[in-house]
Image 1 (cartoon, one colour):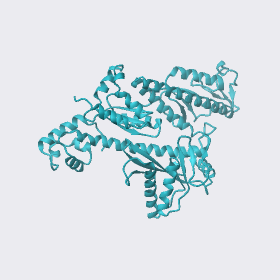
Image 2 (tube, helix red, strand yellow):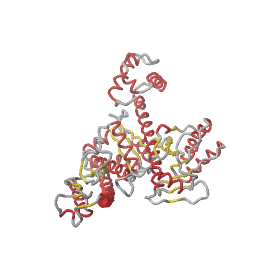
Image 3 (cartoon, rainbow, N blue to C red):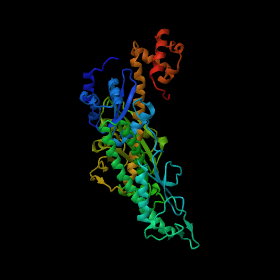
Image 4 (cartoon, rainbow, N blue to C red):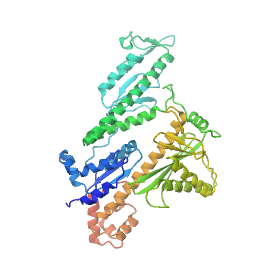
Length: 495
């Protein structure tokens, strides 16, 4: 096996950005060996190519490092996005040096059955009831059981071992006898009284979950720094699932048994932004980079506060090559509303731009170029969740509990998710097609002829040597060799 070119690798590492993202380590045939996420791509990837450290590695890691001949990176906007994208790529490619990216079913959760008048707090392993509220998953069952006992002691709620009995006067007896675990709380309560206890207990458990999340993140970073990849991956699985659960808790109002509708959030947002009314149709734009080489964009639409996925759009940047978020934003906003104006369709009630002052100005410029009166338009800068206006109004920072901010975050996060999905699809397509570059003697012209004939690498892989030989410029011997090469090196993918 030929050695990697150290100078080439070193130069490629030197050009990496000090930003969060995902990296893909590849062997000499372009096969993905390992997918990892990084808070700082430049710092993280460089550790793989430091000889002084490689001697200290586990044998499995030493084996990985010796096989690396190239790498690619996908830059994202935050560490949490890197975690999600890493999981998607691991699931898709199943690299031999990655631990399987599993779901959270093996980790304990706390379920609160909201369908009952007297909800109990129960430790479970699976999500089975959509009408229940879940907390977790958590890394260890022992501390979680202790937390449940603390809930009973602090707030007088029942756990899974209770069978509340309804009394003739409409109240409930929580336990058959006056249990010491309630620590002075009344054993006989009305539904309203008990609901207040549940609300307080949920708030406590939510805070406990966030406290554990921060501890898990620190533990994961420590494991990653020590190159304990399997431990870091296990912790990452828990963190991803826990973050999803915490995101869902934003949907609950003060009464944990009843979730607010989006109408109230829309009313609040309309008043906060001084609009003529609730913004029934919101469109949000996000720019994403593919491996630091070129940009793509997404547009998502929310109708009456809910995702309208049939109206989602994604864009490849056409007007230039490279990375320029401002030019990219101007292009995609212009393309979107040039089309709507040409079709005689109304503009949205609110346009949200993911980014700061520069992106907002670029979006506004697109309307001026089209000679269109822009609808209400704002930017949402992620670092401080600052709302920016295109006019002289000062920027606005809302409290985390604000319904307006929560709605804007849902819209923005959905645009991120959609952009990252497109990002990953394009990256995967480029990686698959780049495998043909590693087949000896296959020039660009014949590569294009093959892809034009079969439309996808997977169809080419399933073709017989005789079918491959039907392509102009591909002889029977080359067809047989290419067939064997593809079926020994490329993973199964969707067409």
